[in-house]
Image (cartoon, rainbow, N blue to C red; front, top):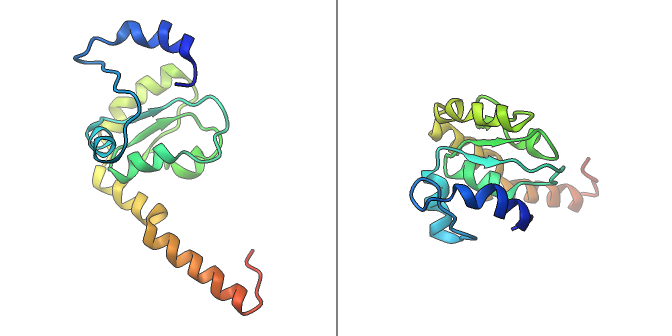
Length: 138
């Protein structure tokens, strides 16, 4: 966890084991199950994160994302389509009901089209072909 003091004072008091649980770091099937079953991924990162892998993982599960419009998030999250980009915690909390109404199948399709392995492989092959012909891609 990034900020142990914040976790201890602001998160732990709300963990009741029923409605709010702390599961720690998860991977594989457990991550897909947690992200896929969530109403939304709250991603309130307060710095200009260069790329939000957890954001794309959530969207691949069809889960909308709520995060601040910093770093790469405005390039990843499409407000009203794959999530919301509020400016502060109050607006983020207010975005949860709206995010819950987004089309989860559309969120998944968007993530697959933009970040899926097939699309990435096709793009890499296109770049390699251009370079092989002496063309430097822009």
